[in-house]
Image (tube, rainbow, N blue to C red; front, side):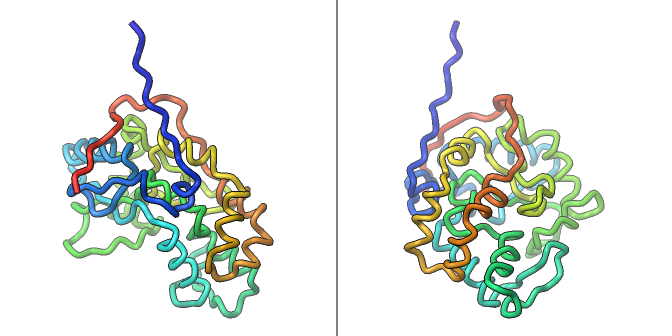
Length: 250
């Protein structure tokens, strides 16, 4: 008896850089759209979390190019907080273009290079651990052992891989800082990660109204290696508790 293989996920160039939404599905069960192959596995992970006493809930999932561009431009102009690697506030106007690019990249991806464009990434927290109306800061302290989301982080460490999820920013690898809240559906994200090329990013940035574009394009080869490709390797084993496809429910 042969085991049925899972259908291969294919991303178009526009889907990979957030210029298209043909890979995205909305659901009444979640506040944000996700990749169509991610919806069912995440909802199953959420159900198991509920049985374990956690209200696993996303604060972010799919973001298109323009959404990421607004985040980037806001930080470049000083309209959004800009932090250093130690979490210290920085004055964007006091930094050279190259230094400003590096500072933003520690916490926010270049438009076109965000993994959130793929719909495979979710930033999550435990709604049951905080009062109603609490807004997660997405800080490492919140997910530490003594933080409000520490128990969830520990539970996810033991259970998420069975549903196809892992943390691409688990450790400080000299690029993006650790993000214990960031989950990636590795069976789906693997294909986009493999196919996203430096030339693709260069093309989309050359025609976009992105602040600091000249500095970005000049440093793009290093940015690509240090901040785009420099993530944890996904698990080798196949998920054991997650299933593929999903129906549109909007």
